[in-house]
Amino acid sequence: MSNHNEISSFIWNVCDDVLRGLFKQHEYGDVILPFVVLRRLDCVLEGKKDDIIKIHEEYKDKFEDTSRIIHSKLNLKFSNYSRYDLNRLKQEPSKLSENIYDYLSSFSTNVQDIIQNFGLQKHIDKLDSNDKLYILIEKFTEVNLHPNVVDNHTMGQIFEELLRRFSEMSNETSGEHYTPRDIVRLLVSLVLSPDKEKLSQEGKIVSIYDPCCGTGGMLTIGKEYIHENISPNVDVNLFGQELNPQTYSICKSDFLITDEEPNNIKLGSTLTNDQFSDRSRKFDYMITNPPFGVSWKSEKKKIENESKLSPEEGSRFFVGTPRVSDGSLLFLQHMISKMESQGSRIGVVFNGSPLFTGDSGSGESEIRRWIIENDWLEGIVSLPDRMFFNTGIQTYLWIVTNKKSEQRRGKIQLIDGTQFGTSMRKNLGSKSNFINDENRLRILELYKNFEESEISKIYPNEFFGYTKVRIEQPQIKNGKIVRDRSGNTKPDTKLRDYERVPLMEDIQEYFESEVKPHLPDSWIDWDNNKVGYEINFTKYFYKYKPLRRLKEITQDLLELEKETESLLKEIVE
View 1 (tube, helix red, strand yellow):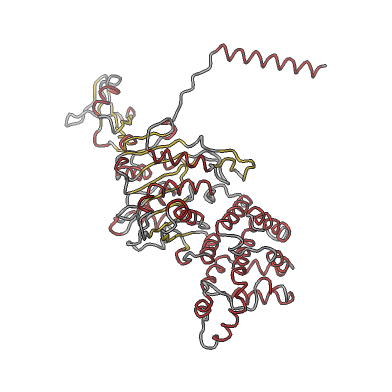
View 2 (tube, one colour):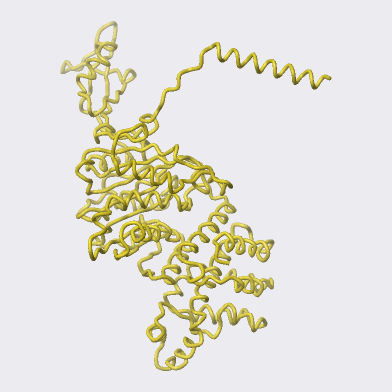
């Protein structure tokens, strides 16, 4: 088996055969995924297992940790000096529970971190006490997961498929949206393609970072895109951080097995425990799909404390924070703090909320204002609906950079990509649409061409801004305007109103033409004006559909009435 569908189905059947009735469905992933990783590690070491044991026995009395010597002599990145692996464990079924811990504890320290974060021990004990451990191990030894047989790309697809199924069984409806490969390829191409000339330079070294890296799919696809579409000679260094211990362990193990640097993958909350917090640590490219629609209440105190600091003091959130029910924009602020002064490009997957949630003066609006007024927002692409495994909501790709090309300066491009979806033959959870290679290239061309069309709109930055103007009217008592001791007109708070005046219009002129004719005694309270920004994507691409004529509607109703009468007659007869 080398096809990702075959292997995914095989592993899924192991769940049904071994775990059903013993574990709850939402626990399946916690048991199965570690064994997938262990089997893959075993397959890599299989041909060198006896040599590893021999070297360990030779040096174990001289060194507390023999892994460095083993790795140096055998050109390995990790090792296991136990005389057991999953295959050899089967040879002594009566001592299985004892031997498996000898096997797990004998991995080199860089694997120990992976195993510990899987939290496997309690599951092993449960499997063993219910006579299922041997069966599970036997099943996994039937599949070859060596990288020569199942490459990194295919392995990523297997993990993606398994995680999708496990998350469906856990009824995860928000936050954990594993990003389908078609979306990742589009996002990566929008971020990297405009830098083709820069990336083609001789001896180029670049970094790609994902603050919510999951199993590492965005990082590895980013590297693949550069090598396959731009230049195979670019030295690409990958960095990531992940909150979930399980997906962190999967990502780190695959980096360990391939030619990546596993120590570049960190565990912990990016928002409150940034593992790349060194202020000099910047990245050339950043791509991510942060958890949207997820509360950051549990981290509120730390985040708000940081927001009170200045950027010179290391604050990422000094501009403001979004409402506590959705932390999407916090991740974008975090990535902006890591932009290189020479120029970085960011690609992020958002739902609709960051576009328009929050009135002028709110945290969301202030963040949008900061990004747009600094001329960092390059473009946004709307995606078709039903693109994700766990949700059918509308999603958008934001492209942010601190080094716009000359023609893009002071402008933002919006692309309506909602019509570029292709129906899938078979739905995968909520995902019924995907973006094929042809449509991906069409969207990329629209973006690179930077021209106006029905599906590509280009606006100046100020277009998205407005001033929320407070309109006051006088208090009237006994038919007369009420004034204070200084002779100023007292406002009637019950009649207070607000107008949104586009930044591209003069406020006084707007007031004179749009408000004064209807409210002749009104005035502007200039001290309470607030500038806001929002991006009303749907409005800009709205197409008016004329109402049907009454005659057509009447004709349709008459036709329906005839059909109904005919059906009734058939029933009666």
